Image (tube, rainbow, N blue to C red):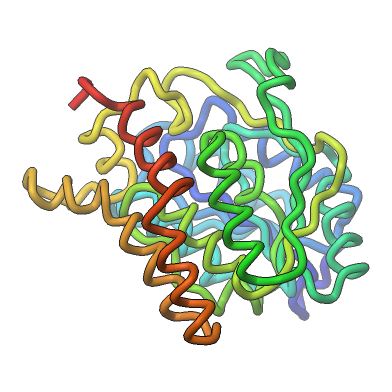
Length: 303
């Protein structure tokens, strides 16, 4: 168990808004990990349900839990960034309030990072669960990926994977375990659509991603979750990322900004001029165009 007088090895951050339905299950899975040298940081986006009460119960019962409450809903992107900003661990992990991780998830990911000094992120395979926690699709969850070696190749591999199934590969990788120092080198998650994919692409230009070949993450798909496409619209997605975005022009820009930010991720890197030019060209043709079509076709007619 973590000694509260020194930083823990691993910080886990849960950004939450009105998460009472699944919050206890998510917290119990984290605090019950076989890797005990952790802290759990929760940032509450001014929830109006029982989220605050539940969190304060855990703070009172386990010294590894820290709880922060925003005075208003600042949007998912800023809440994701906040749990990272206040984390103290050598390693860091985001956790979704409605997902579940196996009890050895963190231990296996830390082992993978320690065995691979060039890796900046370790993630596990995943399965889908429904609202009741029952697995309903493992075939739809991507199998082994792995992103290692040349930085240019990693960036291309990652965008190719997103273009095939961004709704599965994105969460599966995003909710891995990071070297905190590496994650601190990339731009924080932006308050725009698909900013998590941009963050991962920029991180791929820094180091390897290691895959733990077991399904140790359960991604919950249910009505009301951010991953449930039947509830998506341009307005609802921008409300999720940034409730303060107003006006059709602003929403439209923020919905499409991710395309520009893939270019910016390349521009900010220390790649050679030739490599940057090659990736700039890559970002103008498939698979990024394919990804753009998928993202916006999903919501066509819902705006």
